[in-house]
Length: 405
Image 1: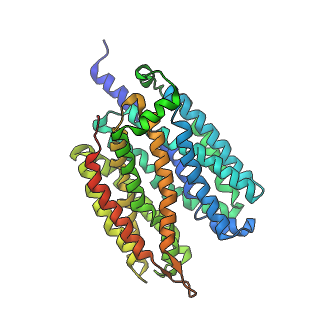
Image 2: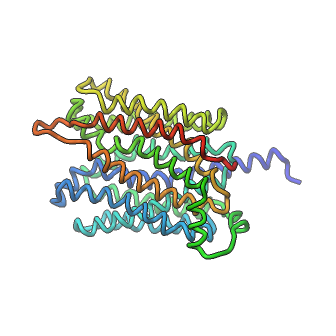
Image 3: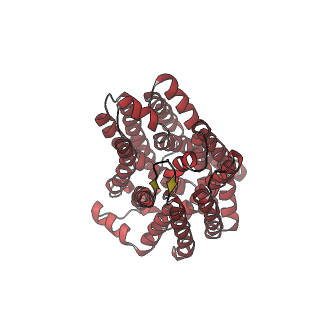
């Protein structure tokens, strides 16, 4: 009979390998999404497009990702997790390669839409596998580990991609992401275990009918509403930070990468810390603490005028830490709001809610923001108040979500 200590060591090593691969997959997905905004000047110049056409490029990813959740939800729980995830990852790599090879705006728009579809599916599947692979009592810490993909993207991915774009053209970042994705597909095929437990517990029936049953279950609706509230508590503000920093806070354009670098470096540490504390103190309690704390940088970043660079970096770093930190306990809570055999379907639907909320939140923020003839931004303070209000609503609502464990 195997020694219990040896079994525990083997299990821990397997979990670490799984989380490492999932973090790499999430890194490619996050970087592919994040890189579009700082690539704006390159794309506008190279393709001769307007700012409105560039906005369509950014929005196409989010709305395609939202559609992907609905497309995937009826079928995701009918497949073994590893093979399904890797198949989507291959499609994502091909779509991202198409972005790098697109010769025109129209083809790039199509390629971004395809990347959004498969990227949205991939993001949902990553969190599904985390929930399947890691017991609930350690799941927030594991979620924090995977969430470091955002930090690494900010610290290394975005700056490196901008350097490549400056040296080789706007296509280079997409080609790099496609290359990294190809390597991770091979690594995942070799190292990821198969996940079949949900197949044995799954109820037979028509896929669409099962999806609708999962969608309308009251606890699932509560969890999806919680996700929407959290997204509105951040993404009404996020798309306009760079614009406000340059126009109102007096930050130079070449100082913008420091925001990503410092914010990403901080979350690399705090994401895992928040996850560990959530496992120890309770996911709901930790979510409430971080979400209320996030109101402070949300209000500061939208209210301050011209400030020294050091002060602005302190505010935006706190913004990165707390606004992204809310997602660590949130994802653990949402992943535990559903039965394991329905988790893939539910998280696909939840990813749709998340993507739609991102698109709608950015549009709501834009309704309040105007730019005067002298370049100053007005109305951003109202956006901050709206975002803070949604954070408070999320704090009040989270207790209504039943955790199934």
